[in-house]
Amino acid sequence: MPLIVTGTIGIDTVYTPDHGHRENVLGGSCTYFAAAASFYCEPIRIVAAVGEDFPDELRKTMEQFKGVDHSGLEVRKGSKTFRWGGKYMENMDQRETLYTDLGVVAEEPPVVPEQFRDSKYVFLANTHPSVQLGLLEQLPQRKLAVADTMDLWIDTAKPELMQLCEKIDGLVLNFDEAEQLTGKRNPVTAARHILEMGPKFVVIKKGEHGCIIVHKDGISALPAFPTENVVDPTGAGDSFAGGMMGSLAREGDAGVDPTSFDAIHRAVAHGTIIASYNIESFSLDRLATLTSHDLDVRFDEFSRMTRIG
Image: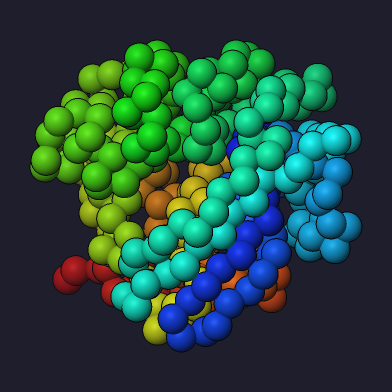
């Protein structure tokens, strides 16, 4: 069954303390998500917009990932593509945003193409909650809907975010955002509070410290995979979401309830593994050379690491 992602496609410039910098590389939430999800299921449908300045070579980079349907990508004449520049600090866990040029992101959101409206698995990447709600309403046959959010929307659009929570199955956010949304410092307490808002499960990301899953049927915590070669953390969260949702779509196709605790626990592990590969290079360079065998090897290693007894 098709998996659809709505979000951004952008052009990034990234500075790192140990690996130099890269200018004008492919970025954006849709980009990382779709590339990661393509290792688990197909088709992955993209709904996004770029400007007429979007380079052909970056489009070719996107198209090398098999199973990704780009027919929902709008190229807007007279508009500019979203651009972001950032500089990572010495510990690679913090970064400074150097510039953000919204471009098409400041315009009307793209419309879900008619041929995409039968999508069963939906991921609403980070954007204004009212935009996420509008996109969700265009997907009436959804079987599973998960959203990402950020501190800006919690500050400026909390009522709309609360409305969104009533309509989705899962919410992904980081530790600080969970506290900001609920007023609860303890992440498990915060996640339980979010469950009362509507979602069936919450994934709270803690960066290099892994993540916590809180579900109506259980709680779990998974560490991050201990990657030695951290080059560029940009896109780690989006590739994590792509691996997670790709795994859930694959299990759903096999007859497993994608909202079950066990399915989500396995899916988060898959998201953790593919994100650990993503950070080993700039942009999509590492995912472009990744194989299913690589994923299986690291997943088996991760399973042994997290097994007790």
